[in-house]
Length: 383
Image (cartoon, rainbow, N blue to C red; front, top):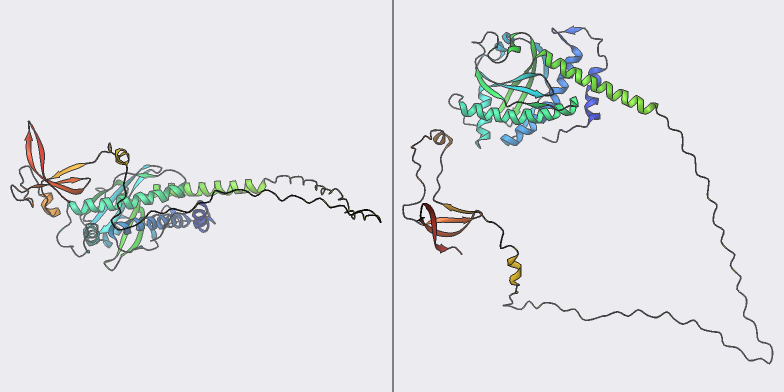
């Protein structure tokens, strides 16, 4: 995915067609006009393009999100489309906009995305969705919608910020009105449907649900920005500055007439020829020239350094780390940690421990006790 940052002129151009006949269309699909649906579709298209770039960096797979399809829907309608349990990610706007939006993802898609984020190949989709899956998809949506909010800020010409997302596994067939997710799902709301492709692993659909009031607020902000830009353009064209007076042409400088060369006077008969005076050559500049001297690169040559050079960095602090041992654990094992859990390391009892300086292995030593603190006695310097 490439850079999706757009200039204000490019953003305005995307909405010219949608706003060309603003107010002429009759309301359709409830309270949303066709022009407002087109505007919301353009907003979602730009925002999700930015979000797809962010998701690509998280899963390291090619991500494509298709052109959105905008409609007005109800909870019962989307429950028929998503009969299986699905993951709903709720994101609230804390600055710039008032309301929330909900992203709906299929259960298996969340498992694949989580596995890719953990460094897997996307094939580990066994078992039920747990807290690990919900935490991972919340972090993915946090970064995706954060970049989407940046795009919204450019389109709406104001700062837009979001709250941390919350994810839940919802069975729509058991919920009657969606109130357990958000109150706006009780009635009509905006449904924006995208086709999601991630490599050859996911070929699915995701949905973004908006309150109708939030959608109208965004459309109003975009229309106001476009009207302001149009008025600014008209004012700029109306301003007709007086042409600057042209500077009078400067008279060409008249060169003083050069005296014509007079022929040398010829001597009269009987008079001796006089010698013409000669101009002395300019004095030559003196340069100090000497043969270049080069350092001999004979075998065994060792350059000498002044002790003052090392003194310049003597007070630079370095981090010294004493490593008792290491081990590898799976995420499942780490989640099972509790007070009293014993972790076996790769060091044998009595074996020298490692001393690292700024992460580089420099020495070995043994643990000692100095009064009430631990210390390390160096036993071997590594070369």
